[in-house]
Amino acid sequence: MNRLALGTSVILISAGIASNVLADGDQHQKRWNKDTLAVHMIGTDIVEERIVPDIDGDGVDDLARCFDMELRDVRTGRVIGHGADCVANLTPVGSGLQIDATYYLELNNGSLVIRGKNSAQPVLRETVTTVDGYPYTHSVAASGDWDAMLEGTGIYADRGGRLRVSGLMNISNVLGTPEDSAFLDLILLIKLD
Image (cartoon, rainbow, N blue to C red; front, side, top):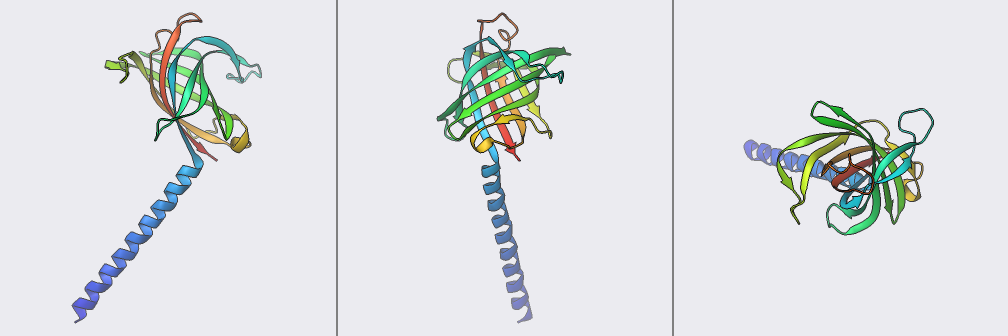
């Protein structure tokens, strides 16, 4: 009789713990959805030089090479806005590059400007777009625990945020002259404060 009571107690305790873990996981998912913006920035555009907010800390805005692209929902693929990736200070390090990237995101609930300290490395195998076979030359990544948010409007006003970037790009024309085109395919995760 005691074994049955003990066994039943263990099962009930285990079920209670599992229920609490699942509930905590649900709460974490809700917080993640509320406080994390995930967008797919993708497109081909010509290089256009523009002025971006100060990069090097001298108080003077800087020149960057910018590409306008669509912003898509990472889950559904539907267009949710438009944006720009503006790159500056492309500095060779080994076989890769350090890149200061300023991202402009225009969404229907507000806009934001956020800065990434990116690294780009050459791809080691042939890597092409899944749609038309356009070749990628570099993988791109950035992540940090600093406040990367420069400006925000709408629901992004007065918010801070940390940025993570993962993506691919054909960088051959980024280093070329203005009016050349480039293809970028980036996932941006912004953890809002």
